[in-house]
Structure formats: C-alpha cells, structure tokens
Image (cartoon, rainbow, N blue to C red; front, top):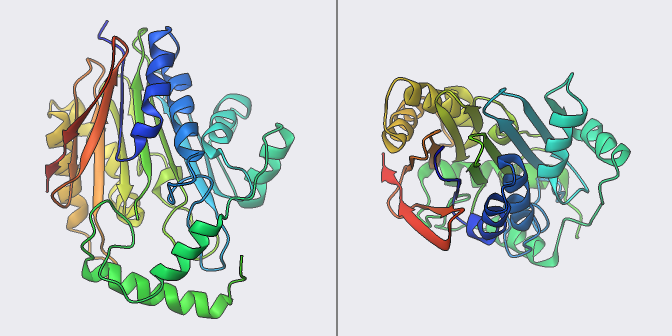
Length: 315
C-alpha cells in the first residue's frame, strides 16, 4: 500500500495537520477529510468557507459542501445551506444516513441537519459583512481566487452582482473554495469540497462544490480530483470527472488537471474567472493546475508532520 497522504488547495493548511493526525492514527480518508475541512470552516479569517463566509446578494451566507468515496463512488452533498457552520459534516451525514439520496439543498438540507442534531451558528461575521460591502465597490482585484488581478469576467460579475444587491436591498447585518483529498493506509480515497460560493450570488445558487463530476469526483480505480474558482465552468465542463478520466487513461495528475482546465477554457463565458484543479492517484502521486501564475497546493503525509507546498502548473 502507498503511504497515507492528504493534499489540499490554498488555505487548506489550516486543517491539513489535523487531517494528517487522523491518518497517522490509522484513521479513514473520510475521517481525515472531514476533520481537516471542519478546521477550515471554523476559521473566521477565511471568508470563502463556513463561518465568516461572504454572503449572497441578500446579505445571507449560504454554504455548499460535498464528500465522495473512491471505492464505491458514494456521494453526499448539501447546497445553499443556511445556519449550519460545518456543511462538510452535514454532507457526510447525507452520504451515510440518507443513502437513497446524494444531495440536499436549501430548506431540505437545513431540516436534515436539524433532525441529525447539528449545531447552528450565526455565519455572517462583522468582518465578512464589511468585506462584502467593500468588494461591491469598483476594484481591480478578482472576485474569487488567490491571485489579485481581476479578469474582464470578474468586472462583469461585479457589475451584475451590484445590480442584484440593489434589487434585493440587503439588510445590515478573496480567496475561494477549499479542496481536500486524502488517501488512507487501507487504500481508500476521499475527496471533500467546501465553500460559501461566489459572493453576491443570487440566493439559492448552488455551485460545482455540491455537484458530482463538476467540483468533486473520486474513483479508486484512477484517482480523485476537485476544483475551485469559477464553478459554472466546471459544471459545464464536467471538469473533476474529466480529470479522473484522464488519470485512468494514463495522464500525470498535473497534466490531467491542465488538460481539463484547457477544455473548460474553450467554453464561452461572459463572467470568466480563474478555475483551478487538484488531483491525487491511488499510488500517491499528486498535482494541480491553475489559470494564473502563483497558485500552489499543500501536501502532508502520515509519516511526517512537515507541510509542503507545491506549485500548480499553469494553463
């Protein structure tokens, strides 16, 4: 068996050490992904996941998350979930406790979370509300993504978002989605994704995070992949599934990510922004790709407490 390993997108380093500890104790990939992602969701300084996430056009925080297991391709996700700070755990509960379904959204997702005893919380913090207001103003920074240079699509999205906010009259009250992929000592793999989605989004918008094949895909015969950035593009391109299909055909993880991103880049999109991807194989190889220079991902192994960062190759 390969060495147990856990990898994550930018800002996952907040949670990866916790996930690595799970793997070092012989824990499952699913346990490691959930534990690591909960740390990220509970980080109020991160305004694209969990508590402190940037709100929609109405000023309300709505969260998406998913988990997928490679051995069975079982999938659980929630979308547009309000009032629950750890959507990754609710997504896991969908996978384990509601096997007749894969996805719950909105009021149904909240009802399920309540029935299963998950804690509620106020997700909109003063800092995230201030950022939400500031980012509606004219800016040269990207709406979502680690890199700061805004593309034309970012500016169009900001103008469209401002129109939405004016329509919804929000009450008083940039980074991006987090991907984490783990391979455990038994050879099981799990992909987890969590986000508060695009800021200023239309209420009820669900992105690629909650959609199998788009933002998340895991098949132990080939590997796992996840996406962050412009979710509408990865939904239209089936990007996470495409990456795993490329792994199955023999592509290197980084090249598989770059090829899938290149395919998504051919799709017309007036709101185009950067899309990034990450992949891990059952033998422990990993890689990532991005649309701009400067994007990285993090890696930890069960046998070493040292966190390493690796550059993503560029589209």
